[in-house]
Length: 470
Image 1 (cartoon, one colour):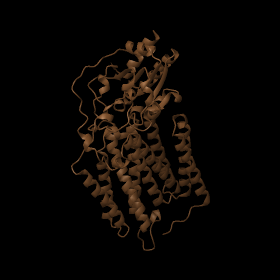
Image 2: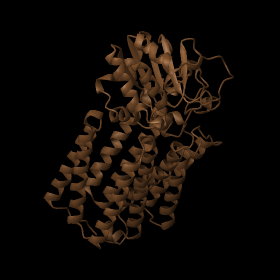
Image 3: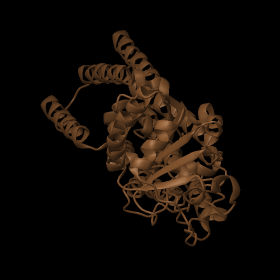
Image 4: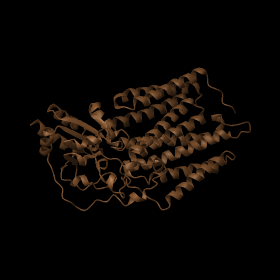
C-alpha cells in the first residue's frame, strides 16, 4: 500500500511550522529573547497540529480535541505550579513521555500497519518502514527508561552518586549490539518476538546507560535525553509520513546533541564516555567522602555587609542552593544596594550550575538581573584574582578546587571558578555537614580568607540587605 503524497499547501504549512521551530531555538538561546522564542515554538506547533488534523481522517475528532484539552490542561497546571527548583526533574519527566509516545506509535504501527500505509503488495510491512519502526522504538524506549532514572536522581529519590554495576561495559555493549542486530534482522523477518525483544532490550539499556552517571554530569544527561527524544520523534515522523515531525525531531535531536557536546567540552568530559554510560567512572568512584574536621571561620550578615561595602568589586556565584531557597530576588536586591554604594557587581554562571542547562540564567532573569552583569565561566574566571569578594550562594562543586588537583574526585577535570584567588570569600551554606551534589568536600571552606555564612540563603541575603541599609 503506497502512501499518497500530501498536497502542496500541506508541505508549505509544515515548512512554515519548521521555520517557526528554528526561530524558537534561536530565541531560546538567550534569556533576553526566550519569551519570543517560546511564542514562535507555540505558533509552529499550532500550525503543525491543525494541519495534521485537517489533512488526516480521524476516528473521532471530538475525542482527539478532548485529549488535547486534557493534556494541555494538565501541562498548564503543572507549568503554573512547578517551582524552578523542580524544573530539571520536570524536563526529565517530559522527555520520558516523548519517549513513551514514540514507543506507543511504533507499537500501533506494528499491530495495524495497513492504517499507517506502510505495507507492500504482499501485505507485509515495507523493509524501510521496519528500519524506521525499529529505530524509533529503540530510541524511544531508551529515552523513556533513561529519563525515568534521571528524574529519580534529580528528584532525590535515587542516589546522585554513580551506581557502578559489575561488568557494566560488557553488558551495555552486548545489549546494544543485540538491539542493532535485531533491528537488522527485523527487516527480513517481522515476527512479533523480534519487535518485542527490541522493545524490552531498549528499555533495559536506557536504565543501564544512565545509572552509572553521577550527579555532577546530570545537566549533560538532561541535554542528551532531550536529543534522544528528538531523534525518536523524527523516526516516528517517517513511520507516520509526517514532515513536521521529521523536521521538529531533527531540530530537537541535533540541537540537543550539539548542546551536550558543548557542555561536555566545557566540563572537560568525554562526550562518548557520557553517552556510553559513564566510561572511566571507576577512578572517580572512590571520591566523594567528606574529609575529617578542620578549622573554619564563621561569619555573619554584618561581616559580609561591611566587607562588601568596602569592596570595589564583588563576584556572585549562584548555585542550586540559591534556587532551593528561592533567594534570587533578594540576591538581586542585595546587588542593587551594593551598586548604589559604588560597588561593581557581576554574576558568574558555570555551564552546569543547577541541574539542567541554563538553570541559573533563567532564575536570574526571573529576578530581573541585567543580562550584561551575567558572565560565563571562560569570560569571568580570570577576574577572581582581582576581585575583593567572591560571594558564593548555594554553589559547591563548581567552585571546588578538587576538580583541578584530586584525580580520585568524581568532578576531576571539570573546569571550576577560581574563587580561592579572591581576597575574601563568603560561602553561603545551610550547614557544614552537607557536601555538594557530587558528594565531595570542599577545601574552600577551610581557607584563611573564607567566612562561612551558615543559614538559609534567602534569610542570609535578607539580613545582609538590612545591614547594608543601616
